[in-house]
Each structure stands twice: as C-alpha cells, then as structure tokens.
Image (cartoon, rainbow, N blue to C red; front, side, top):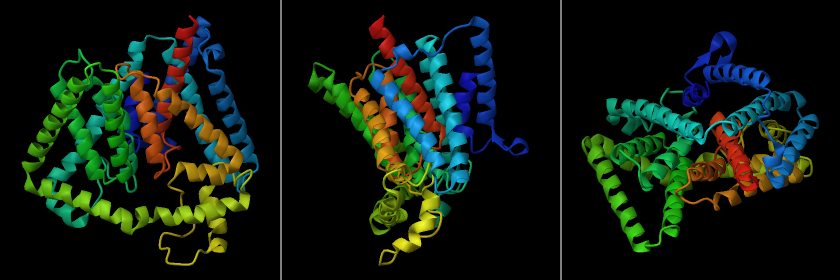
Length: 410
C-alpha cells in the first residue's frame, strides 16, 4: 500500500474525487494508515523510538510543532490558519507513519520507494512531452507552459516534484554495478526535457544544482581525480548528444527549446521573476507589522491583503494585489512566524543541510539529501510547504536520521 501511495503523488492533481472532496493519494494513504495501525496493534511493536533520534533533531521538531500551534492561535485570521494547520497535521502524521514503517522494514523497501516514485515521474513526464510533439509550432507562438494534466498553475509544481527522481537516476548512473545505464540515461533525458518545457526557472536551477552536487561528491570520493573527471565529461557528451539528436529530429522542437530558454531567462530579469521581487519588497515591509510573533500560520495571503495598501511602495507594481502568495518559503516563514518562528525553521533546515554533506556519493541516502536541498532552492521562488512531494522527502529524511542513529548505537 505504501508503494501505491508513493506512486500516486505524481498523479494527485489528475486524480481528485469530487464526491468525497479528496485526492486519490489521500484515500490511498488512509488505507495504508489503517493497515499500519492494524499491524501495530496486532504485533504490539514500537515503531517510533525517540532514543534513535538526534537530540538536536528532536528538539527542533518539537519546537516547530509547539510554535505552529501557538502561531495558529494568535493568527490574524484564526479560521484561515486552522484550515492549513489541519492539512499540515495530516502531512506530519504521514511523516511519522512512513518513517516508522521504513525503520522497521528492510532498506530495500526504502530504495523501492525511490524506484516507484521515479517510474511515476517518468510516466507523467512522457505525458507532458507527448503534448509538445503533437503541435510544437503552436506552442512556439503561444508560449504555453506544459504540465501532464493541463491544470492551470501546476506547471511549476509538476517540475519541482521531479527533483528526487533526477537525483535517483544520477545516483544510479554514476555508481558501479548498475545495469542498463543507457535506459537510465534516456529516462534522465525525459525528465530534463519535461522540466525545460515546464518553463520553471527554479526547477532549472535546482536540477543543475543536483548535477553539480553529485559531480563534486563523486570527484571528492574517487582517488583517481583525472579518471573521475574524464568519466563525467564522457557522460555529458553522451547525454548532450542524445538530447540534441532527439530534439533535432523535429526542428520545431529544437527551435521551441531555444525560444523557451531565451524568453524565460530574459523575462526573469525584465519582470523581476514574474513579479516575485515586487511581492518580496512588500512582504518585507508587511513583516514589520507583526515582526516578533508573526501574522499567523500560513497567513501570508491574509496579511498581504490586510496590509499591502498601507505599505504602498512608490513605483509601478503590476504584481501587487490582494491575496498574493509569497512565492518564497523563507519570506513566508518570516512574515507568518515572525523572528521566533523563522529562527526555528531556519535551524531545522540548516540541520538537515549539514547532514547532507556527511554522505558519500555511493550511499543511496544522498538522493534524499540532495533532493531536500534542491527543494530549498525551489522554495526560494515557489511555495512548496503545502505539497506532498515536499513532505515525502521530509519523511524519508526522518527515516534516515533514525536509521543512522540506530546503526551508531547498535
């Protein structure tokens, strides 16, 4: 049941059940939760053991939970924050259940989760790319962004959700003993192509970071640096050759790729990241209204609506209107949680980042850590803390932290 849940995350926007106002992934998780609890009570097995959690991790987690509850109570719009609190509590339960389940089963299940998530990523990417090949000329003139299921505004989240799969494929390709590397290379090509056509600049930057992260890790852990460097050069030559060959098969597709890259990079400077820099300027001013405790849990759009007319920065700000989202998880943490909340969240993120640089490239755990850092990069431009693809990485992080502590203690 866990595998089905992992697989369904990529299809969440397409598989929404109106009759019960819920997504398929949520229904599947409830079924997984029931089976988990049945095994728990049947076997009387303790799944989550705090003694295997780092004390720093445990303190930061409990501090975050306590402050979220407090932040909801003192919110400038209690009902609004309460709705999001319910959603985050559901994700928190998911983190506990998934990490506990993995901890009490073989590590093979952990890798199988990554495999299944990657397969689902490839499938949705193929669906998205198929749309492009149907009529690339029309897309060239319309400048339409692509997602697999055509949901407006979901293009960025579609691209962001691919990061763990990119990390996993690169991990498999650069490690010895992996079979069918050509197939893995083609799969990686599919993911990168779909990210390009999604026109999501933050995903472009994050995916390039993942590549750079693995290159540095690989070279640092190989005695023969020249051999490692030549292997990487050879890999990129093959990868770019395949990419160019596929795109050159249809000149309209190749023209579309160059047009997208040129337009999006130019537009990033001219539009201030589609108005993000304008929102951020207002957000920093709005932070000053509730700088200590914050405006309330997940309340940035409410605070923006309440204060943006009072802020009224001089100049042309076309992106400024009521209900704007922060498009930045750090700014939203600052406005919503105030100084105290921001410090707690920042310390939590920094703790996980520090863990990332202690893992060798040959250890599969590096997939999770590199994905998490990639999400922090994307989070600088996109609100992702209410998305399942972000929280499943948190769950796998918790599992890894517990497993590392258990291995050291045992």
